[in-house]
Length: 263
Image 1 (cartoon, rainbow, N blue to C red):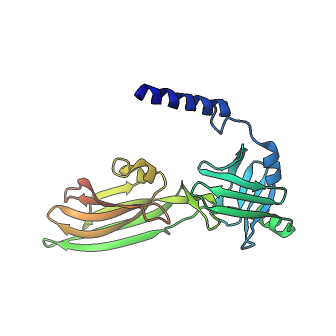
Image 2 (image 1 turned 90 degrees about the vertical axis):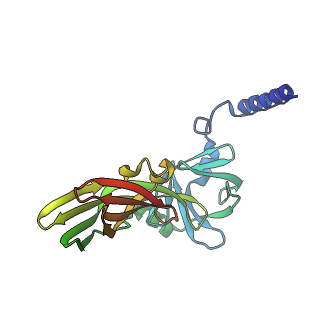
Image 3 (image 1 turned 90 degrees about the horizontal axis):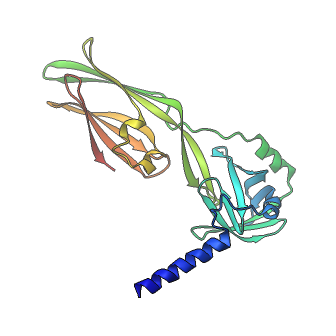
């Protein structure tokens, strides 16, 4: 019986490969006519809000935070960027109905409003900075000694991309600037510790699929005890609940240890 099932599955796979030429969507021929019909500005059929403009091989969005994306049309499927995939339910010269993988149907209508076309052409996507330059100075007394902790959160030009679904149900890419966090600890004028913390420091503690979309978000002083100075660092996916809390302890002789606190 197992052999029969195996041969049936094998035959099904062969049939599917034959139908698609054995090639993934990225390598199959595009539906040029469908792509031609998509050129222009599209608005939501219900809200009348502008959703995107198809121009050439690219999709441009109406908001200022979403990056333009490459799109393809293969068979009856619209591919946007690296993750957006939509079944084309209906398409004419002026109508486009697309359904997401989650089953959400978006009904679009082509607009002839010249002002909307100008808006899309003038929109320059912004890279988001979630944290302004932030500096914290903390004075700590322990066993009769005075210590000074200095934390500085500095936005960089290192870009982090994240795929999100906008209010129109379309997958878009937002880009954020990551941070570098500096920590220095002094006893009087003597420097006990000084280091720049980057997101790459947490590669072994945060899953790669989360870390690739996350930024080094914050660092805060917690306490001091016999083990040393304890600080808490957060690595977070922007505008999402995914946030990893990592603890660092700096001993009085400047040695750093790291431990996962919570997710």
